[in-house]
Image (cartoon, rainbow, N blue to C red; front, side, top):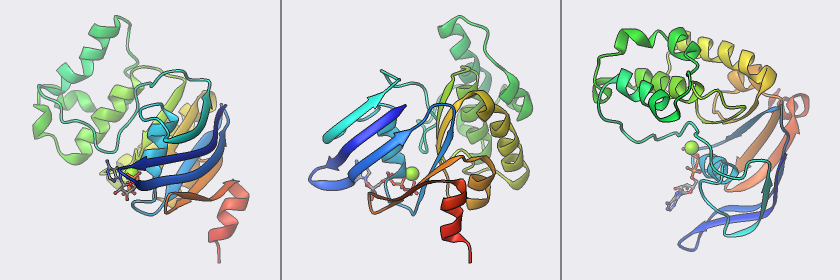
Length: 207
Ligand SMILES: Nc1ncnc2c1ncn2[C@@H]1O[C@H](COP(=O)(O)OP(=O)(O)OP(=O)(O)O)[C@@H](O)[C@H]1O
Ligand SMILES: [Mg+2]
């Protein structure tokens, strides 16, 4: 479980997140939703210990940050295959190539990172993260820049992954959220407006 108790997060006196009380259960897929600037990416980084709360408490089964999918990843140098295989070299274990294969990234292997399209880059970052085989996934807008077909593939892959993983992700797309989510958090201006299971959550948005 990840438990947040009265968590506030500020930057230069600006309140970004306020009075966050939250439980995230292991084995569940939790979707964080809300408008632009509501604090989704900030909350995800807090949950993964990338940043620390200004006040309040975070108790988590994870003690340190783990690799995650960022909304604005650093631009990487060199080629696609270099960036993908570097993990294998550092970690010295056989990486899981299933997402790399499913997204057909081998066709781009020799291309320079900075020449990739937005969607191609996104697929590479997804494939890189999934190559680690982590049992917890933090994904910030995993479907950003993806075309319809790729987005469908992503949903299919996540539905398989969620069977034995804890997934915490941000999304704008209600359809995708409904498809893969079990538990939902809705942020508004840095505060939690809703935190509910699927049925309750979507009742608010129907009609
Ligand atoms: N370093 C910073 N300095 C000042 N303000 C910041 C900083 N980082 C984030 N913010 C502000 O905090 C608020 C929440 O940002 P955050 O990126 O968490 O929003 P978000 O819900 O992920 O939005 P989006 O849907 O656009 O991705 C925004 O108003 C943003 O401008
Ligand atoms: Mg964001």
